[in-house]
Image (cartoon, rainbow, N blue to C red):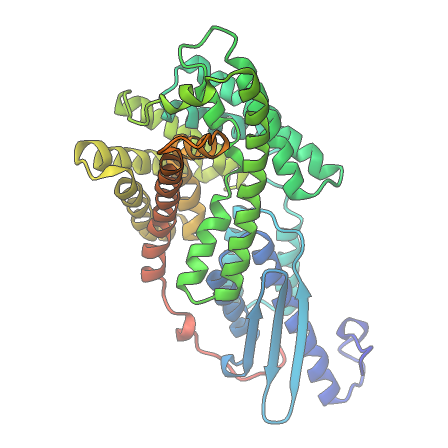
Length: 447
């Protein structure tokens, strides 16, 4: 029985009904696991994976009380059991990459299959279409988007437009460097470190051009295309949803990515500091207070948000929505921080919270998951200046009183801002999320 395959039989073949039920159930579990795998490898949060899989299981007439799903970072396990039988299948998840379009398409398919009464063949055909759908942007177009995203960061940090251009070019080269390293088989974390090193060195070299009045701002923004915003927000979401094991794994992956990026930047800065002993002081003197008009910051936020939407493969039709979300997030952050005087931590929380709250309704208007709209929109609020001040502070410790305090203070402030951004995105989505237990499950039968 182990070698039986439902696809080798035709409807006219005479098969023992019990054997046929086993073959049919195996096919259902296989399709269910493939659905979960695609969501996990596309960076969906665990709650979404579970809800989508249960919705697909309901379409397949698998009773929820007999279905058991265990989701891990590298493995998804499904079991269907009753008083007499128990069937289990496992699926490895290995090729993790952010693909918001795939998450959106699978979510739509899980509803459409039930509404239009798909057969298993119809569902599998649609699933294969999703798998083989090319990404919305070519690799070089994504690199250009990543470059302008970092340029937008640079402008948000208070640079002039020449520095914006330099940061964009350095980030473009760094992004392509990482893609080349991954393509040649270099470890993904090592690729991140190399990309951060290359971007930082190029940004430092651009400071000698004499063309920009803010020559050191590109150093703060050139490597921020690596910021693991999606894993970080998914980690917070999973922990709040009590998916602790997956959440901890996502946190470990986030820490590894940040560590690799930090190593690349720190290694470059250590080399640069040898030749420029004043670089630490120059960066510490950079203001973190917005001096440009709200119109300029809105434009820069829109560019950064749209750049990250390209990196995350957000559907093209939603680009202007993501740009609008970036404008709302940054302008709300600046208003709460500067006009109301509550500081950058509360300001960042309110910016992401506002965007996520609006997205709760917008997801029904545009028929996409919440994170497709919110995550690219809030990334422009990443506190790059504080992160670099902390990094340089720890690199340049000389035993002077107050050095450790200042470096640690900057590290805590930047960590709090990033945490508040994540919480601001996660909380409205979790509160508004409808419980999938309302799906009426049907008895297990052939379809």
